[in-house]
Length: 492
Image (cartoon, rainbow, N blue to C red; front, top):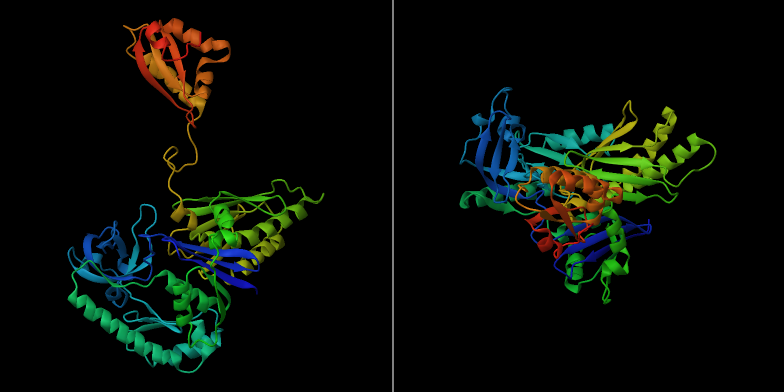
């Protein structure tokens, strides 16, 4: 596969993109003060305990307190008592070591766990996890063999997750990692004993560390960087890793590296609601706090005279693009896809297979649960951070994030109600500032509604037209007709 990683780190905003076979498959952006916290370990302070939901809110020094459920406490997970409450383990003011599992999103604080995970390249060490697992990419025989093998090296309270890299490497390299990770945990405990909560004990995520993990995951290709020092540091990180086959280039052009490799255009498209497919069909993607919804439409594509064939071709193309968009935009959580209705189970199976193939190398764990009775495909994708649109876009101050604003008709009818309620008895005229579309709806054809209201209210209505980009009105002033006429335009 032709693969390259384009890295833009010479400005304050750090960005990198993965290009595979000429298409951008992933973009990551890190803005100052907006670093991802997933994997970070904190000495937290219990701010509040909620027995009703069996959870506690932990102060880790951020804007919002983190959420810690009782099931994420090692003392509970390893307990034989099946019905305790969170109050049996935590109380306000108590300190607790926690790790971030999911970054804060929307109005929700970060999701925390007390079951600490320390990651190596071959294993993940859980000091108090009491849990053993092996990569799902291994077959059943390998998984059983590895479980039996690693359990012998663990203390009763310890847990371990064996990664695919350990299975491929063979040997006992994982044992050396286990020793190092145990030592790292001991250092964390010593550091926690010396600090006052809330405090950072370990920061996992830096841009270069994230890029390094991508290099290890993807194994080979070309790295193009726009900063010489960053290039040297990445080369040093890969020293002694002969199994990785990366070539390095320094980009020194005046044009921004993302513009040079046409990534900025892909980034702009990744923030749009509509995604066009190459056959004229399109996707509509809506992300909410609860889930992401993707709707498939035939659009301009009419295909052949066989409607079933047209639908299948569109859905197959959509499935491939949906897999790419999920990775590119980094959507997570619950995802629902409304494909064009298919009549046969074989067609649904084909569409599902295409989507699964597109996601088989996804760094995030995905699970496709299948089609509902209404033909909606259900799936989940692990969410650890904000999606690309969520990270880069702000809520619209006009619509409040709904994507819709009040129509000119709605505002015109509201204006009429306000005029009926206005204290107009002592005035002969009123000045109304509004957009042209609101005035047109209010006055009606040949000003029929305007004349009727002026007669009923016994007051002249004078309009001043504003060039606001969205429908708008405001009652500005009551007074004499002569005095207000100079400030507005009398429609009569």
